[in-house]
Amino acid sequence: MPFYTYRPRDPDKCCKYCQNEFEIVQKITEDALQFCPDCGNEVVRIIFPARQSTEVPTNKLLSDDNIKKHGFKKLRNVGGGKFDEVV
Ligand SMILES: [Zn+2]
Image (cartoon, rainbow, N blue to C red; front, top):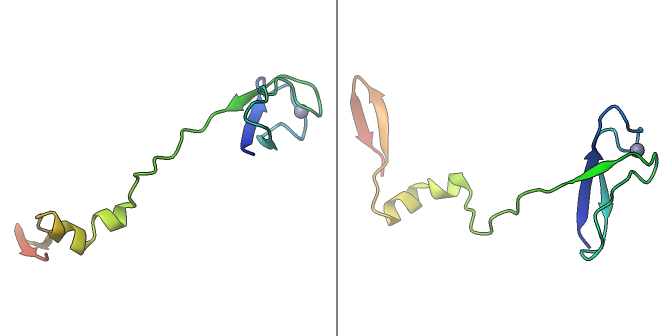
C-alpha cells in the first residue's frame, strides 16, 4: 500500500504529530484524510510528482563511453582559449 504525506492546512493549528509532515499508509481507494488523526485539525495531502522511469543519472549520461557512442566529443579546457579533446 502506498504512503501518503500530509501537512497541516493551517500551520498555526496543528499538534506535534502533524506540525511538520506525517506519512500514513492508505489503500489507493481510500479517500484522502481531511483531519489530523491526533488533533483533528485540517490537513492536506501532499502529492509528489511521479518519478520518471526513463530518467538516467547525469553521471551516466555524460560518461565518456556514452558521449562517444552518440558521436559527441568531450573537450577539456586547458586554458588560454585552448581545448584538449578527451573523447
Ligand atoms: Zn495534529
